[in-house]
Image (cartoon, rainbow, N blue to C red; front, side):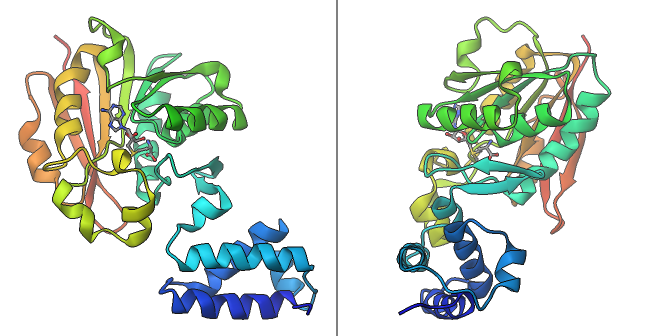
Length: 288
Ligand SMILES: C[S@@+](CC[C@H](N)C(=O)[O-])C[C@H]1O[C@@H](n2cnc3c(N)ncnc32)[C@H](O)[C@@H]1O
């Protein structure tokens, strides 16, 4: 039996509500957009259009996956970040709105810095931070590092998708360990590291806990392992006057402030996100 777009969305929203998916109607609309490859305006203005049997089948499968807790972005394979459309897979963290603040904080530093700024993105994941920065600043170059080979493959495709591949190289490596003896080569080291404490994993939303890569979420124990390493190791790679920017967890501000070596770094600010949570630590390398 043929079903109209409006009916299909109504039924899907009900299934999603039964699966405890918040914002069920909007998510049903997003899944339908994905299945019929049309935008939201089309769906709103063509509610009476009938779906083909193939479209109905494909839509039912997508709705069932979402109702079972799979993130919307894993089903559609995409997420918007800083005005760009990024490919996402189960191998990368889904880019978050709060990470856009990291890019916003980095941009003036990059724009007002040297003519051809050089950036290192540690834990690049989908590549969203480095790719957005290079997209905004056409003179910048970057290195994206991740321990996950699968993540680097996604990041590479995102660099191609947004026409910055010629200005970025990627390394599968453990933080900065593959960069050798520590020459100050970067104007900016930027990172959204895994920072969830091991003990907090169980309390995360099911979409995050059961579907996003563990490696992207937590470094184990107190969640500060990678942050500590970046604070200790990145100074050797940042030029005097250059910057280190890191995203941190909602409750890590005070602990991170205590970890900063003030003989090496000047604390510029901890920027708050839209909820007023300290999120982005901005440090400047002291000129020796
Ligand atoms: C929170 S995710 C951030 C991904 C992306 N930069 C973003 O903001 O959406 C952290 C990333 O760090 C990577 N990672 C975890 N441990 C690492 C390590 N020791 N060295 C390099 N990358 C690591 C993970 O694979 C993951 O891609």
